[in-house]
Image 1 (tube, rainbow, N blue to C red):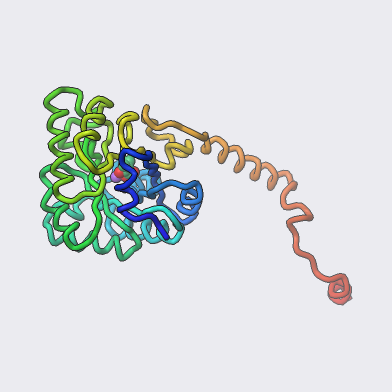
Image 2 (spheres, rainbow, N blue to C red):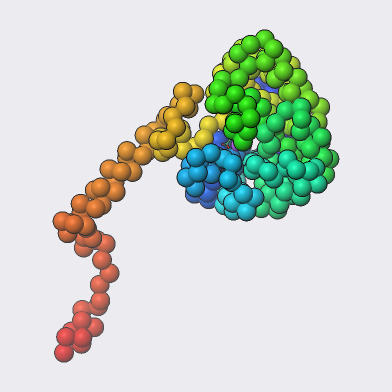
Length: 274
Ligand code: KIV
Ligand code: NA
């Protein structure tokens, strides 16, 4: 039985929550086996899987495809899917319809970026029975409207605004909130001000859980290397070395070896030679 929203809620103040992104079946299976609590089908897929410069171009069709693959690979983790840019902003009914599409694709919950201004949207989605994760602090879908790629809540006023946003998301019915690039002090205050778990990325140790982009923590994505993304492997250099070895083996005739070949029966070979 996969984890439920209730399981995640009950972890607040008792056990740290582990979240990692996944976009495909194989990675989903591996991360699920490693015991993470939630798999986030992030719209970061647009960057690490599809090569866009940012998450703006990501479509609902793409998110549904990634979500289906991740849902097939999980056994225990709760699957949360990002609602991509312009899939929930235009109207409440559009938001509900698109949240429903992600659930039909296999998501247990959806995530939306935004604070107080989207509380009605969140309420609408939660009301029809779809759990919602909030996402405040740095919001990649609207970077250009904000102050750019920047740490959030460095001042008293901005910290207080974030606390208010977090409270209104909780009131709207969100079951958890991602805090992205929020100062550790503000994250601690926010986490203590609400009864739903906060999931931090670049927001320090006092959040109730942590999330990382899987490509970042495996050392697979070289374009952006955020300070907060601890790298547990340097897979990109391992992969390049492996493929170079393969290439050298093919060129030199070392691969394929006898152990990689299929053979005809001797008698059939004799008959063929006649
Ligand atoms: O898209 C994503 O990967 C995210 C996480 C970084 C929280 O939203
Ligand atoms: Na995202």
